[in-house]
Amino acid sequence: MRLSVKNLGKIEKAEIIVDGITAITGNNNTGKSTIGKVFFSFFNGFYGMNKKVVNAIESKLKDSYREVLEDEIDKNNQIEEVESNFRSSYSSVHRKTNRLFKELSVAEETSKDKGLDDLCQIFAAICIDNGISKEKADDLAQELLKRRDVIEDIDENKIVREIITRYFKQNFNGQINSLDDTETDSEIKVEIKGETSQIVFNDNSCTKIKMNVNILHEAYYIDDPFVADASKSKCFFYPAQRNSSLIDIREHLEYKLTQQNDIMGNVVDAVTSKETLEEVYTILERVIKGQLREEKDDLEFVTEKYKKPIKVSNLSAGLKSFIIIKRLLEGGIIKEKDVIILDEPEIHLHPKWQLIYAELIVVLQEKFDLSVIITTNSVDFLEAIEYFSKKYHRQPICNYYMAKEIDDGKCTFVHVDDNMNELYQKMVEPGIRLNDLKSKWEEEND
Image 1: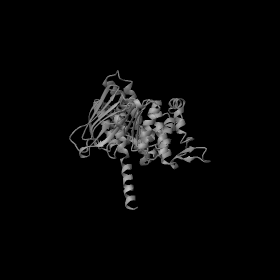
Image 2: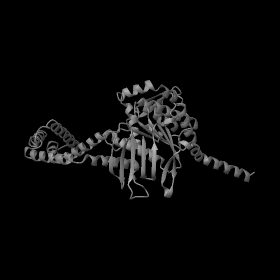
Image 3: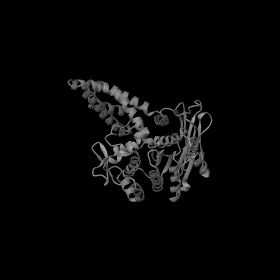
């Protein structure tokens, strides 16, 4: 897989290859996290796109039908429920409108071979059955069909562009195009299996899409270990549970982590994972040996080390980094060929645990054939990724990049596989500088 980015945010140009594990380092504020967000937004934006389009059309159709139906249903409802309070009255109207919409949808689906006049009569009959007066039924049926035709005539390509616009805006806080060259289009190209797809943005809106592949895999963006605290009750009202495609990076991971709390959810995936990942669990148990369970509104970690279970929210940030991986595996959430984005995973880890985490990621990539994108500022962690990639024979599918700031604050990325010494030299420069300062201070105060 190859990602090409032009004029997006701080990035002037980037060419990033992801064959297995891709590690990106560089100074702060040079666009490293932006690359991860592009991958996340691309894969999750287009994942299940057909369903998103259908849901968008159905949602608009439902809202449009509701505009036509609610007034009339509300009038009848007020007569029937004069003593009801506003909340229960509104709930009743909403419920009746939804029921009527479902009946109309079923009737339309089962009457495709009928003409418009026949369908209008069917709609009118359904309206009458749901309490609409006969005098109003014909007019309402005609208005419903008129609105249906208008909505179904909308170009689906425009709907796709709007979905992608909203998805990228959500994850980039509305700032997609270049922060410096506001007139030039931003372009994203993703090459998968020799087929190149393209997205173009102008004024922070998607203006062009050329998709040559069907996105079958999700991306998981891990940048905050405190996501490990997520429980099913805490995530109940997230947009994803309302079939919304607009869900941000953190909410996406929290929602996915809570899927394993559905007793029958992902059963086959979970069993498959446990049977094939003994090596992964062996590595995990060097840090977290025990079981997770949800008790009331809290997630608990049960271990022989303590007499009582400990709430995950009370675990250290470093432990939570491993808990996230454990939950993704035990829930059967990670699947073969998925995309994992790790944004500076070393931040909360002691150097000893950085080595364990690096080995864990390399072995996970091998077992699931994952596409892994890592951003890091740690020499220890980067060296560990390089070492374990060689140990597990993953080095041929590893790529290393260094983000660099160029003119006027813009950034680009340099492929440094053939010059890793330059990369490490840049990363250790602050340490060398600190040693020089210490030596100078000691000489002056000797």
